[in-house]
Length: 455
Image 1 (cartoon, rainbow, N blue to C red):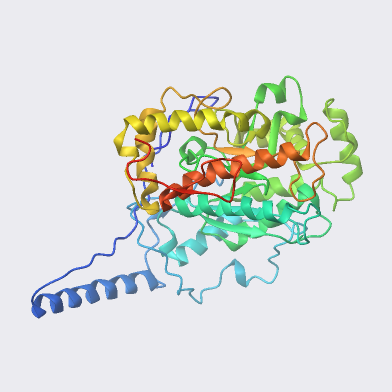
Image 2 (cartoon, rainbow, N blue to C red; image 1 turned 45 degrees about the horizontal axis):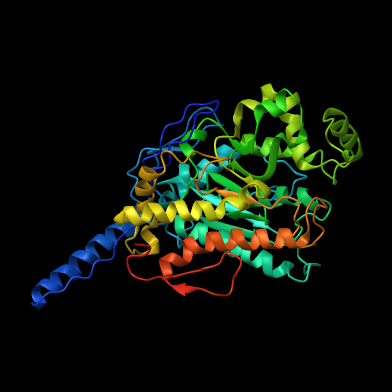
């Protein structure tokens, strides 16, 4: 996919031109047995050679070079064509997994994580190509049934939405529905899951946390990773609101991208000290309430805790944290949901004119059509007041599982908005399967998409 040209904020941005190339399975037919036999022999030779190279514990790892700066991404000097992971090879050489002192919990820090990851990758060379852009999405919800009668249904649909996005773009996903550390409840529960995911997936460069109540509403858009190449943490927010007005709502910690590196391990260790498992939890509640005048509750929460680190320890943490305000890295649902109908009409209008976008195609090659869309969306803008599909719609305050929504709006308003967002996204997926919802408030009915639709 060609990454959209996003507006500049506070760092330089170069469009990504990297593509995920997948192997093709070709069917070769011949009238002669001789040709068929020769083809099979050749195929076996190639397969044997690749099998030997990818399973050899002595394979030369010199093509993996990492920067001396442990905060930088893994850089590879390999052809971007993915030859596939060797899932059946785990050499007997000792790794960090064999260390009895290794702990997945938040209480015990991990040190020299960059070296440990690098060693593991060198022992598993089939995972090296593309490592610097590899993403694991992590999300989760509670282990017990929802109090809201339709809460479990809504969480299922939100989960399906994330699975759809990951399948289209080739990402893995880990969904956790248990408190890994019972004392770290509520919004703090994400941290143990993220640390465990980092350890369980040393082949992954980025962990992408997405709250259970956030929905992808632009299935084509991909994160502009090159924009974040000098950073280790990305979240949505407004720097002016943070540094000038000192508001705890200047950032949103419900969706963020965190690099799988030692810097991130250190950040989470510091951040978690503000959590409910810490003996300093009550003290931090007072500090955060005093620091952020618009924070009306005493409880120490993850979002104001991170805002505090940005505000008070900017030199230590801020240089590696990218506050993304150039597009809807996540967007407040109240200002977004009402735009879906207009956006749908604008996109259909483009498709009526641009025949390439009406062409039926396999879901696997969906990314190849993104560049065509970008040609047509140059004037669409980003964020509020644009007519581009919002990347992520976040239902902050709706509490779909408990039903204890913010009193600013009704439960019916939340439900209708969630239904519209999920069906708006689902239409982008179902279109590849030949169907669409006619009404965004009708989740149970679809119509077969006619040929050359919408012309």
